[in-house]
Length: 271
Image 1 (cartoon, rainbow, N blue to C red):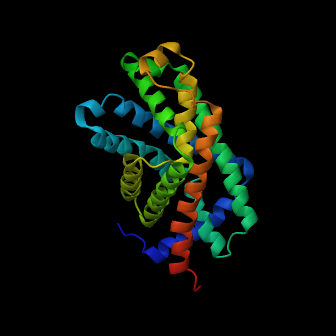
Image 2 (tube, rainbow, N blue to C red):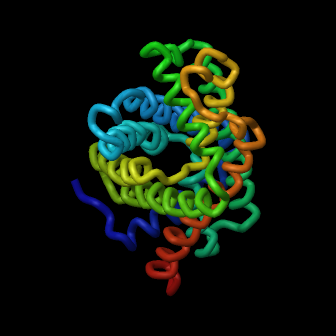
């Protein structure tokens, strides 16, 4: 099957961005909820797959496996159809081309961001209610606690920089998927950049809407706290917001500037 050239990708994404901003708010919000759930599915799968893997194969390979399975979340978004805030940072390309007004851009980002959060919390509630944290004698719950706790203890600048690198790769993944004319190509386009960002330890704001609240929910189970041996002082809603702010800003910089704006300048500015 054929694929688009970089210039054709830029033109296609420009048109897609325009259509995204023209969606009715209700439709946009429902699709955003679905995207929050889909990314949460990837996050839960990554946690499950790596819960006891590092001591056996090493941290690096364990992270690589986690990244590979996490990519199912973006596959569901791209192929299944949903509205993801981080991917929608590419609408900046349409805005730079003056095909989307700034007002439409902001409306889409706000509605989708809120919808992604609702979807994430919905899946957290379902998974927590299912008692899956007890898997492996509590190993899955301990892994989820450790992931959440590490995120809320990141310094602001580290979280910001990890957020930039993350969405640079996420938006490149969407960019590559747009180039493909077939489902297999889209799957591979989602797999490798997402595997790279997760394995590298970068920070994704929507994924963290799942990871950190799950840790906060699990903090209410005393036996897991004792087993984990972690200092969970900062694992609360305030800590969640302290992580979400710099990571979201970083994601926006990575997606809007390093992908959307630079590719607009290279391929569409003259038109």
